[in-house]
Amino acid sequence: MIFGSAAAIGAGLEVAVEQSIGKAHISTLAASAAVTVPAALYLLTVCFLHSRHSKRGTAQQLVLPVSALAVLGCTFAGQWAVLAAGLVAALTVALGVTLSTRNPRPDSALSLNSRDTHDSMGQTTRTDSLTDVAGLRVGHARVPGDRALSGTTVVLAPEGGVVAAVDVRGGGPGTRETDALDPRNLVQRIDAVVLTGGSAYGLDAASGVMAWLEERGRGFQVGPDPAQVVPVVPAACLFDLGRGGDWRARPDATTGRTAAEAAARTEDGAAVAEGNMGAGTGAVIGGMKGGVGSASILLGSGVTVAALAVVNASGLAVDPLTGVAYGRYFDGHDGPPDYPAAEVHTAAQRRLAEAREESARRSATSARPPLNTTLAVVATDVELTRAQAQKLAGTAHDGLARAVRPVHLLTDGDTVFALSTGTRPVLHEAPDPAFAVQLAAAALNEVLAAGADALTRAVTKAVLAAEGVDGPGGDYPAYRDLY
Image (cartoon, rainbow, N blue to C red; front, side, top):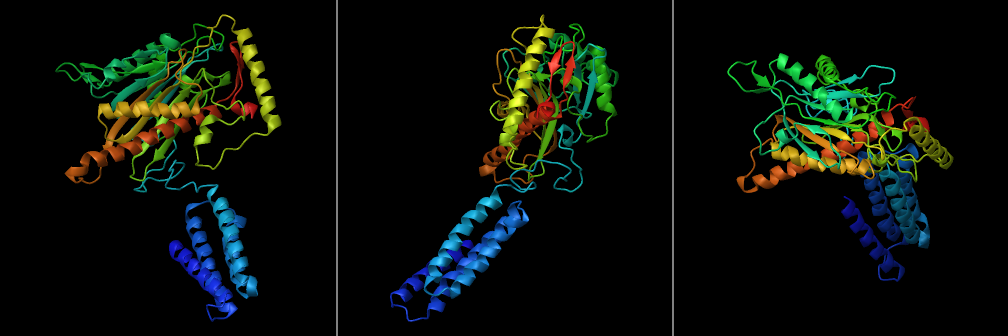
């Protein structure tokens, strides 16, 4: 329709020019109409298309229709009709398209970030979190004590376990059982992943999760008796020692068991608690309070890809030049980011600098330079091999790099786990054998890209959900306090 209208405009201009030089023996009114009618049709067509694919205010919605009427009115402008119609059409097309495309519609097919939406079957209420991947549950536990600021988060798989992989990029990682996830090795499925504070000490939390799983006969069977299992529980830790004021307040096996029990008690699909929870209890990023965040994306194929992040990085999650969370630059879901007022940003940077100095004074015995780590789990319901899951973990790091700058430093232990519940096939229909590999790769590419996008949003949500802490171990204001 657009191309037809544009062609008609061109033909009308030709007729109008011929009429003006005396080659076409038609009236001025007819020559003008030859330009204005297709021009108005063009504007109305553009208006219709953009009304379907963009979010606009009332004023923006009226720009193109009113302009179409103005163009038609130019038909009666005598010898100036063609010029007037051309100018009005050109200006309003440029203005209308610009206004209509600034804010993409939230439910645009370009980004199906899920908030209280439904999957393609219309059956599942979505929570915009890791648990949108059916079967996964998340539980948190906090180390008790007034001077304790640490905890553990457990991602619990459904019965039968999940395919898992890991990609470690940080220079100072603390992990357990990650070698078992190498695609070359024996164990095919796992039953839980542990993310924990407490640095290497906190990895003991995985022992509590192992014991809890063993009691339920879940794990890698090594003998004829169903109770003869060895649960494989990969774990990764972040550095938060002393942030509550007590260097020895750290997660242990009891903390891990408590988090596993909390996960088991949740309903299937229950939203993930965010902010100062579990492993994010003592998380800090660039002197600002970090925490837990989670996000999910529903692809057009019906596949769900989701992420959970525990943000505790040496780098920054907020642009020091603008005050905008880095991840918001890449999230077109809600339109362009909101830039804080200059005076608000200046005050926030001053407050953050003061907090960093105060934290250094209160925790004079803390590690120098500060030690950190961002941990993440990316999951999908599509069926993946362990090699494909490892690729998903690797590409998800791209999402981390968008939201944290710099990232993967020597004092970070950045680690991403990838999980596949395998309830959906990669391709719903048997492909032509000649193109099977290409079609499967194209479908998986969507999952890989979505994993990175979900992790970017999860990091941003963690920063926005965190609550400030001012205690004996330091002063850690939250983004919500500063902006």
